[in-house]
Amino acid sequence: MLQNLLRRFGGQTAPSDAAGADADVAALNPGDHHYRAYVGPVERFGPVSLLQFSLMTALGLDENDRVLDFGCGSLRLGRLLMPFLRPGLYHGIDPNTWLMEEGLRREAGMDIKTLKRPAFSGDGSFNCDVFGVPFDFIMAQSIITHSGAEDTERFLASAARALADDGVVMLSYFQNAAGDDSLPMEKWTYPGCVSYPLDWLNMVCSAYGLIWRDVDWYHPGARWALVARDERRLPPAGQPLYTNGHPMERWRAGR
Image (cartoon, rainbow, N blue to C red; front, side):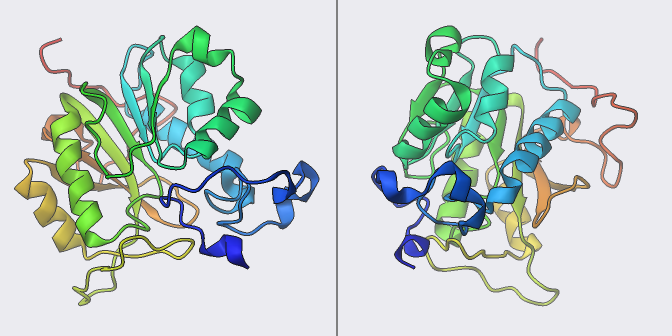
């Protein structure tokens, strides 16, 4: 159907009232023009919220951290982060501004704009530094699982500029099969997915002063990786993030 061809980063306008009543959401496909379906399988909307938030918790999230929710869409994560963070510290970016508006209206509540003063941008250039402030956390769930190599490199380069010295990027990705060094050339593939050779991701990160590290954290379809400019911000390779609910002890630059 036509809605399946719409790209999440295509800057689409708001859907009509015929996009689907809430009772029919479960029957929608990823990419359909409904705020819950447009960002992925509707049955994962809630679970992926918790997976992202719990990963940040394991990494030592504090209410005083400044967070960028890159590709925030319909505020699947934002509806949990905004109430937790202190005012002015949540930043969401997504070219599909109707998704953010629907997320505010139907999930987070419009009053949160006054109470928590979140910042939003509709920029679609894969730049993390559009707000001009350093971030302690940058979440990029389901971004490079769809973006071509040029935009993926642009994202990592801008993350290097936007990260605080002790900041960390969390992203989901798919890895190429062994021996496959091909890169996705299509600018944006959605609802389909793309994969990358791990060597290329490590090389790009290194070129911008970043360190890439896979992390053993559940994801229903992809895998998680962390990116930081200082290894002290990352868990040791092969070591679980935490046990018994105790978060990772954070290294903080100059704090």
